[in-house]
Length: 182
Image (cartoon, rainbow, N blue to C red; front, side, top):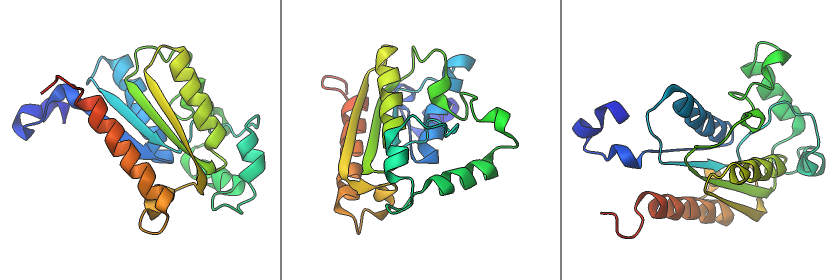
């Protein structure tokens, strides 16, 4: 898209990536790769309940609190997804799999991390937002306390999912079209 911006009639300075769950992981990994490869420039990244730590090593209270599957996503689900995605355990800690393990997060685009309160991934999403902020990345974090993983996919049935989508859209609009920029 960046290379075809003129033909597509889009502003190459207002490109954003976004995704939910593993898609949130892919969005932030795109930002890491774009930075390390010298482009394309990405202006914003929005992650909804992202997987930021595929090591699944514990230390996140939400894994213990919600990992039994009573709230949709389980630790067993995460282990299964991981087994489908990686050839072997040596890949779990790679920053392109677990972006929270990246040694340097400086210079990444403005970020939004939205999590669900009843989600095993909640605390690792928060930890990643904290790491981004510590690296000087403008970041906004919001937890939608009353909902589950994948709520945005069920926005027609889960009001908090619709609220999350509206929040993300508003954040992207404000980030990509700040006052005074036409």
